Image (cartoon, rainbow, N blue to C red):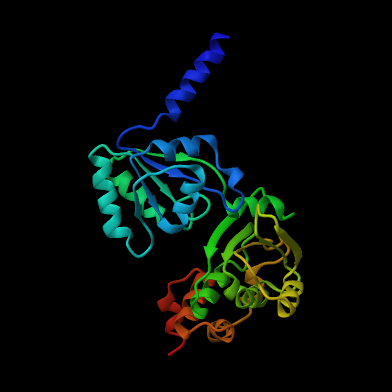
Length: 293
């Protein structure tokens, strides 16, 4: 019995809101019931809350009956606002950092806030909870033992193709976030780089009433979304390269100009194609460039 009491005491100590601490508080990705008891406690007791979008977060706090001072913290104000938040933490205030949905600092400017606190010796702790990418991975039906999170692909076609070209021989399961208006273009690029038989799980509306998990090949996915309008935010879970496939096989018999042209034909600029060919061959890009002039 005494050991149980000791554990309970340790839990209470851990859950106590400490002055001058940044709390990374995970919020629901759809189902409000997924918000933890500890998250509610921290949001209720910190001195202020830093939110990606204060309007969205106000709806959540109102639902919980919590009233706290809020400041916005997002990609375009993270430098100035990050300094302000850090100064308040150094002065002894406690702060909860939240994003619109999911865990802060994952594909999110919270990463910069944590780095700033680490550099200044400001305590940071996490209140774990929902993560859309991990939720999708567990539902995908694809291997989960090893995976890589790739976040959002660039809106720039050349940069997007270069990113995917780097992953052509990646053997781990790959996780991507995607917005509905970009989904079709992204699926086209995935098909071009990874091939029509590569498996994908397309996950949308996770934890919500209309949650949908589509498990198919990339060619089937492209065909499906040619006829179906994308709706909602997506997590794409893409099968890794199978052991029998090797990136070296496609270029080992090519000379350098042909190798570069292969990537230019996929939509890369000449310089990006040179960089990618250099990565394939494990040589400096200048070594490839001199064969192109």
